[in-house]
Length: 253
Image (cartoon, rainbow, N blue to C red):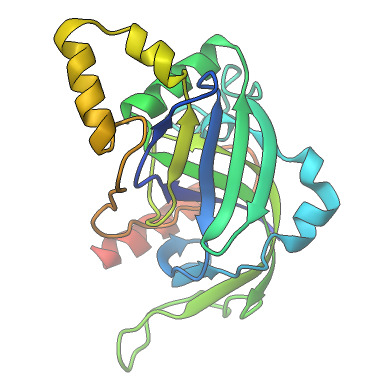
């Protein structure tokens, strides 16, 4: 088994009234939603079964961490700053859509920066890493997955058991369907009192119709990106893996 990382696009962010703005609800993944993958196992489509996290949540729910960008820099190298826990999972549970996470963010400069970026829409991705324990089919063919020579279709791989290691926000969204459900922000009254004049009037008018505090509808991004895999170890990808992935991607373009 190897360590996999999957990135999930946040197609909506809602800032809710109530709370102090440090509790974030977001999906770590969505069920039965095939996404195109190009990694050292080949070129294929991947989907996650609704039961994929049942065993790991039953056995080690209290051992799952929350990190920004998997504790890595934008270039993929280990980061001392990002390796500090970003927050504490309050709830991780499967629902009809996907794996819902509720996270209490720490009172640290890093957590403050990430929360502000989420609220501003600058961070639009969530991701998780873990071990793919069981799949259907269980293992790729000897030469890796590839398009069918007959109709050009990609094989479908269903992940049926995943040992979840950690999750968190990422600046690289790539998987359609998951969303941040809300950042529980300041109370409505506190938000209102912080405004004055025309800003307060505009806030009240927008709030009655569905505001940034309580949007009346969510938006969905156009198209689905690729699921991207991180290296087996917590280090840079081997040169051979990078070359193979680059060749696969060039064939996809």
